[in-house]
Structure formats: structure tokens, C-alpha cells
Length: 576
Image 1 (cartoon, one colour):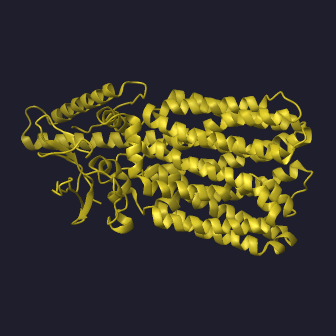
Image 2 (image 1 turned 180 degrees about the vertical axis):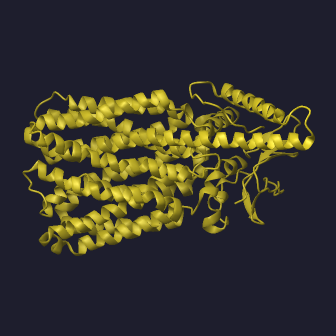
Image 3 (image 1 turned 60 degrees about the vertical axis):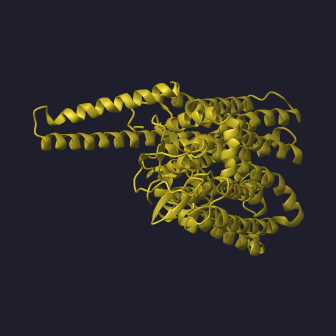
């Protein structure tokens, strides 16, 4: 099988035609470059011409890959920015809606949690659909759902208590679209990270950092509308409508500019072939997830614990500011200014996550995040009496907690599941991890008023510190320490049956490998990944990706491809 460059990829075209066109295009390029030395030139000149042509072609491919990567970050990041705006806007709209329609604790919980419940559905559904049907098509559908939900919320016509049911219904629809954006944006950014995945982690972190601007945009929009002295009803309706306009713009840009990555198209073609050979997509999905339980438990569990306190605190920021004496309960403008001040504190954290992810490491960033934010929460709880007497002290410490939170756990929980799973299952597993996070968000947002009523804000902050300790322990026990080299070889190791050992090579020396990862289980030997079939016969090792014909029996599930000569072509993992 020849691996080659491709020109423009269109996800709407049949996969088989794309692969055929890619191979033919590469062969034509090879012929042209081979003739660069001249028909009558000596062999040395011909060789030099071929080398120069190959280097020029590689440089062109790298520039094109970098350009596609930047476009992926922009399109995915705009979607995430809009999603965070739509999720956070309810924090500012609630006090204004309450001025017009009497709001009970039930109504408050209903409109706050509706989008989160919808996001859980969207993350699971669109994550799986994106791996099956393609990133681009699902991106367009999620943007349309988000647009519909936001615009319909702005146009809600019910009055009295009925308006809360209508708002909850439309925010659920919007939440389904928002939920789908999470796995799609992460997978799309990671898969445009270059041929060796060297830019993948940085690009996913850049995409994630756009969330910070969405969180900052929400209070800025509401502040501008309130300063225009508009009626409360006009302010919250226009605030919802701005989110709908941003989603509509994102849908248009994606329709014009977005395409699936070559890595995903190739992986989907291989996955579809395996589905036909091994009993269908659902059976292959269940079998694959069974082999991913350790990293999936880590990514999903850490995201769940993180979102319990993240959403429990951030969706009730205005209430916390009132309790700390930083905002008057009857002044929506005070709440808006307080939320704006805290969102400004998040920007250094979002920007700081980019070099942290790239240099310190993904798992290390998550561990550091849980430890540092846990200490900040413990200080807030232990010193709560002093915080109430000195509101400026509370604002400084809570603002520092926002910086640490977004530079550490918030970034890492988003980036890690975008990188540690194979392309065939990346959106599915990221969607499952994100959905677990939103389950935690639903728990946190529902539990916050109850915990405050029972033990006060001091108890809330101490409980958040305990949750951070649990997150740190789970991260250490389940998630791998990995780098760009590990990410670059994941698809190859997965095809060869050595995925788990490859992923955990830097974590526990490759000594751990879950049962059920396939008969072609990998084992480390001599610094390279050596692969063995179910009889223990070593299949070889190499420092580069190649394909060797190895005669002998291979089962249908061992990650090996049969050749026309009756042998087996084995795609081996990279040396790390």
C-alpha cells in the first residue's frame, strides 16, 4: 500500500474515489519529479533531481498542512467561542428575566440546566456520528441546531411561569448542538496537526483557548446593552440573539471552508472496511471501547470531577458575588460588572495553557491543575470569614483560582481525549468524555443551591478542594504521560494491535496492557515496539513505519492486512 499526499479533500466525495485519486496524484507527481534530472542526464544528476523534487514536494505538503491546520483552529475555535457564550449567557440573563417574570428555585434550575442536559445528548450522539459520517457534515448540523435554539430562545412568546418551560425546551435544542461541537472541534484540530502530529497538541490548545473569549464576550455584550438603557426584556432577548447570529455565521464559514482531514478520511475508510468484515459498526465500536477502558475512564472521570465544581461555581457567579458583598442583589448591572471582572481573570489562564500543554505535557498539566486549584479552593474555604469582611481579598483569590483553573484542568481535560484515541474512534471517545463532564456539570449546577443552603459557601469551597484531590488521584492512576511522538504513532500502533502498550510506554514502561487489546499484543524490546501474534511468534521491529509481507496465519482481528500473495502486510509502530 502506498501512502501519499493528496490535494484538496472533500468529505462529500466517496472515500474510495478519494483514496484512488490521492494515489494517482502522487504517482503523477513522482513521475514528474523523476524526470526533473533530464532523460539524458547521468544517473547521479537524475538522483539529485529526484531528491530535490522530493524535498520541494515535502515542503509544499508541509505548508499546505500548516495552512489547513490554521483554518481548522479558526473554524473550530469560533464554534467553541460561540458555545461558551451561549452557555454562560444564562448567568447574566437570569436576573433580568426574574425582573419580568417571577422566578422560583425550580425555574432557575430548569433554565440553567437545560442546555447542559442537551449537551450531554449532543456529545454522545454527534461524537459517534462524526466518526461514522464525517466531521464536516456533523459540524454543519451542530451549528444549525445551536442557531435554532438561540434564536428561538430570544423569540420566546410565553408569559408568566410558562416562559421558563419554553426557554428550557429551546435551550435544550441549543445544548444538543453545543454538545456536538466539543468532540468535533477537538478531533478536527488534532487531525490537522501535521503528518507527524507535531502541531496537534498546540492546535487543540489554541482551539480550546477560544473558549475564554466566548466567556468574556457574554458580559461585554450584556454590559453594552444595559448601558444603552434598554428595557430588561430587550437586553436578555438581544443577548440570546447575538449567540444565534454567531452560530449562523459559523455555519456559513464551515460550509464554504471546512473539509475533513486526510488522516481521518483514511482512517474512516479502514474502519468501514473492518465494519463490513467483522460484523458491523456497532459490534466493532463495542469491542474497541472495551479495549480502551483505562484511558477512557481517566479522560471521562477527570472531566466529570472537574465540571462538578467548574459549572457549580461559574453558573452561579452572580450569587457568589452577592454573598461576598461585591454586588447588590437587586442590581443586574453589578452582577454583570462582577462577572466581567472574573472573566478577564480567565484570559491569562486560557493563553497560558498553550505553552503549558506544549512544553510541560498534557497529563502533567492536568495534575498540576488539580493540585493548584485544590489549594486555592481550600484557602477560600478556610479563610471565608476573612473573605466576607474583605471583598477585595476574595476577588483577588477567586480571580487567581480562575487563572489556575483555565491554564490547567480546563485545558487538559479538553486536549487529552482529543489525542490519546485512534482517529477511527477519536470523536466517539472525546464525545463520551465530554458527556461525562456535562453529567458532572449537571450534578454541580443542581447541587450548588442545595449545598449552599446546607453548609454555606465555606463548605462549598472545601468540597471543591476535596473533588480536586479525587481528580488528581484518578489522573495519576489512569491517564498516560505522552508526547508528540506517542501521538504520531497511535494510529499505526492501533492497526497493529499494540495501541495500549504504545500509549502507556512513557507511563509504566509498556509493562501494562489490558486484556482484550487483540491477539497481536505489543511488547517493548530493545527500545522499539515489537509485535507478536497470538502464538508468541515475533513479527519484527523497525524504527520507521513500513509494511512487510509476513507469511503465516493471522486472524481477522489482529490488525494485519492480507496481501494478494497470501501473506500478511503488517503495519508496524514507530520507534519512540
